[in-house]
Length: 501
Image 1 (tube, rainbow, N blue to C red):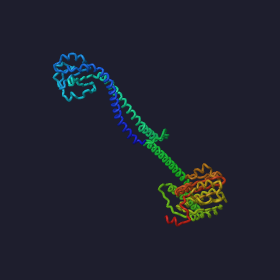
Image 2: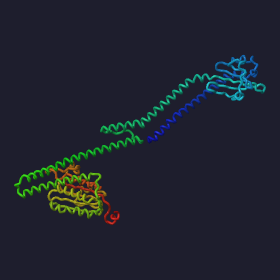
Image 3: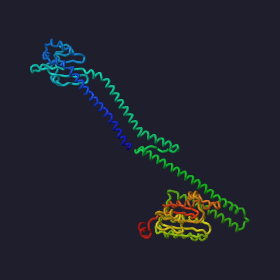
Image 4: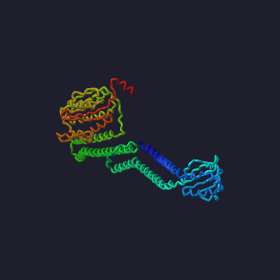
């Protein structure tokens, strides 16, 4: 139950319970009194019978009949008293005093004749009024009053029970309310506070345990756990980015140190050795220029990597026809393969349109191709392909890789760059797309070269295009870098896309 509804119901119950308890106590009191009254009435009837028999004598109801009243006082005691009245309301006798002194007292007729024959039960007494008849005429009325001694003796006991019951009820009600508040509010709040303190100390909060609450406190606990999980993930991401930045700075500093030292050395040689041959001085200048160009390339790649990682950076996408665009893009590498004396196989099989940033896409393929060139042995083979989701894979792709590629390219187009060469170890393959992580060639015990950001830039470009990039490597098939791209629609009808634009 929601906490607000639970509180509303709890407050209503707390308000109604005392009323219900009071009503129950009152009903119990009335029931006890009625039962007690019946028992007392039976007992009273037996005690009143001889008194009524004496008081039923018409001769007692005369003003000047004191001789008939002499024995009446013997019927009265501390618990029983009675009065005799004439039909006119004049009291002719009372058991509480001298008849001559009290005979002048008169009671109103309306009060005298009220409740005749009815036993009046009051808190302290019973009273009964009955008329006395003589030869068909009303001779007088007697009123008998009996003290409820047993009832009065039990008042203190009943009062003690009532007070004890009320106190017990209050304690139970108060304890129940405290227990429910503790269970519903205080305990969850303590759990939340403990988890907040644990989180503030940087410790793992652990599992909540027990049944997941469905009220607001349960929601609050779940939201706090989700929040701290998000904060921890964000903190881990920040730490990861910080370490990445530190590694980039360290790697870049290391990579820049070599060309800078070379530039410094050759510049010093140019400034000090005035006797150098002109050809030799020109060679020094060319070395300096190459190192400067290398440094500019490193800095440019770092700028691109940083820009692609920014959430605010957006690439200006355009829609292209896949077949024409990728034919032009991959065709530019034929001359490069011939110059490196490598055998290149190329296949473009797509009829789809794509939304791409042409310069970034050229940079992606350029990084993948140059990375493949560095690994490919002399006179080795390189395969380039762009295959949409409906076309068959090229024949030169190894059979053992086809099943995985079919699953990977489900509903998307893939760009494949495959090369022969030694396999990249699995532990290096997992981190190959991280910045400044390069494959170390175990045969010659050195890194393949490059800035170390090429594959990282390629991956960020793929992500910016809504795709992804993976790499497979084995001794049998060599190494294959595969990037997948989103397909817009079938390109058989170019007018459809132009109308949408």
